[in-house]
Length: 264
Image (cartoon, rainbow, N blue to C red; front, top):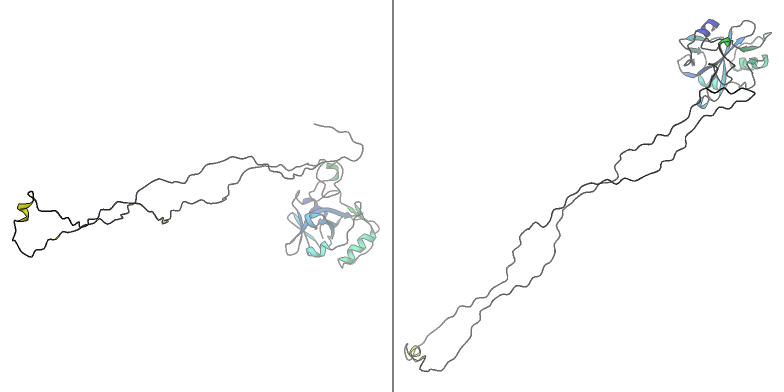
C-alpha cells in the first residue's frame, strides 16, 4: 500500500508507473485519495500512443521505488482497463467497482467516493498552485508555448564522377611520295669522225658483253610518336539558389472564459 507521505516524496517530474519487472507502463498522472481515509487509492497513467490514453491503476498492492510507483500489473493489463472519461476529479462507487472487478480485486463499497489528492506526485499542494491541470499533473499557473523553427543548411554529397581516360584508335592515312625508277635505253648512233676512234679501239671481230645495273626507289613508311597537346581535368563551382519548404508546427494558447489579458 502506498502512503500519502510516499506520494508527497516523489520528485517533480520524471516519475513513472512501472510493472514489477521494471517495465515502464506510463508517466505518473493524478493520484486519487479515498475521501474517508485520505489514503492514496488510485493513480492514473498514460499508456496510449504519445500518452494519449489515461488508465486507472489501484494502489492497494503498489509500492514506491525512487521516483516510480511499482504495481503488480503489466502494461497490457493497465492499458486495457476501463476508461473513466467523466470522473471530474472523483470516482463514483460504480466506477470504482468496475475497476476493481477488472483488476480481480475485492471491493467493499465505501460511504464516500475516491477523489483527487490535494497534492500531486511531486509533493506540491493545491495551495501552491493556481487552478488544476485536467490533462496531467498540476505544475504551476502557466503553460509553456513552443513552436518549431526551420533551420536550413547544405549537405555535401557525391553526384557523379568524371574521369580522363586515354585510349588508342587507328586511323588509315594515305600520303603520296615520288619514287625514281631506272630503265635501260638502247641508243644507236652512226660512225662518224667524232666517234671513229672509240668505235675502232677494240678488235675487229669479237664477242662482247656490256652490262648496266638498274635501280629504283621504293616507298618506305616510318612512324614516330609526337606530343601534340596536354589535356587535364579540374573543377569549377556554380552557385544556384534553391528554395526549401517545410511545415513547422506552432503551439497557440486559447483562453476560454472571462479573463484580463496582462501582457509583460
